[in-house]
Length: 245
Ligand code: 1GP
Image (cartoon, rainbow, N blue to C red; front, top):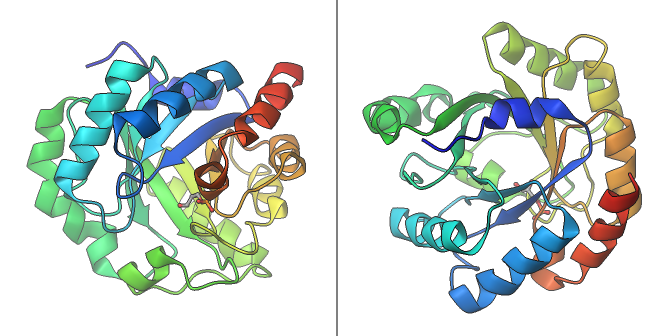
């Protein structure tokens, strides 16, 4: 087990940046090395690794390379119970609480529980809430669940609070990869009236104003995926923001 305590790090402050790596697209050292170097320069706090249809081998290879290339903590963001690696610093142990598909609430967890125990990595029970991002996301398709509409703040907050009452330590609001509409920041500011637990947000985040908006709404971790797949230089803008915030 690494010496890092991810839950404590998540909790420590607002406005931390995580870079999401999909090992189906990014898995070679020639891709990961520049990403790792630029992310370190930019002050990125975490790498999240996972995707809806990623294989065990892809996740293991990518995490193994990352651990050689960077000191930034590597966190599994699993799309299914095969996405495990003993080399990761921890795993977001997701329950898709916005959905009503038992596979993503308990079946995957039962199938992998013994193995997760034996990995010995930090397990972070996470209430994962899918929000309508204006496109059919791969998570909605694969999980066969309906996202919470963007204008349903009360449902979103009640869903998050139910997860907290069930013992989840972290809430992740996700509009899905490549979302047109991001998760409304008001979901987070409203949730903050009830809990101090760490909140993660992702899906369609493409500019610094949006990052600032989430930061000001007391979001602990802001996840960027697609925008960096298109152009790594966005990390320069992130560097300037992180340095001055
Ligand atoms: C999706 O939260 C992530 O699960 C990131 O989304 O790829 O749109 O940044 P993007």
